[in-house]
Image (cartoon, rainbow, N blue to C red; front, side):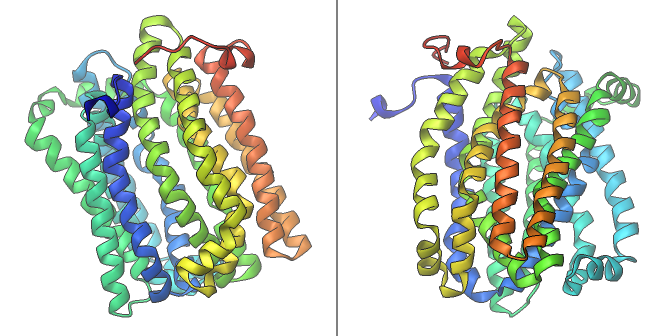
Length: 432
């Protein structure tokens, strides 16, 4: 049996995260045929808008300092950066609550779905869970404690799915967003409890003076990565906002459901590779000034494992969705077929794009994100001119896919490749 297990440390770490995260992501996938019958397309639009707002605000909630946790050689500095993230998260969430609660009605009407007002008050609490999760996610990643990451992700998924199913059985039409928020809060609490119980000594490193010094030392992350990630999240979530405004909650709900089904299984492997790659790339850059070996081996693995499943969805998405989730969701299956090239590129390129962070090339990332926002605004508005939802989604996919190819080129450059040909030449990958 042992001969079938991964031999390299890199593969074992990925397998640990894939297994744990796979269980976590399998739960909502298994629950989706039930959820698609408990909730309407309009209900999934409420979830889509709730998650879109949370995603757009999430970079502000951490200042992106979590990305710096991997970089210092001294664990004391890494632990103190966790403190920086938690302090920013608490501050931003309090401010978000003060803004979103009194303005819930106007914001919901502006976005095209008044029912969103019933869940906007949960956004700050969900953000606090996400920010806490991110801080300790990078701390555990730094110390290669991937089992903890897997357990926390399973807790988030399990609580979310249980909440969604329970609220659905109780006929609570906002249950999807409620379950998601509860899951995020639970995951953040689990991560914080694990760190307190097993890494309690990290607190002795945290002082106000050290927090200020490290916040200043890594100021490039909030300066460049916060606007870059905010723009990126706004770009990726823009179809949810604009499809709701252009074509109504039902069409936008189909898109949100499609994204949920496509993103969940692909993020199992993509996020696991990203976590391990960032840690390995950071070590390689500190040792050699580049991370070509880690980049090349990760790219090859991601490409090999992604071709078959994305080909199946691209060819048979509509009948598969209608059979598994009900005939109401056939249109969502058509959207899945259209979006397949973009999701494939996102799966392959996104883990490698973290090279821009570990190589401290955040300004490259910011320029790319601004370009992506302009491209997405252009394609979606062209779709509105055409007046057909599916064509609008197709234009969005084409523009986003083109920009992901540019992103890949920038990531290669940051990794230390002088030419794309170097990536495809044989050799150069370590067994780890």
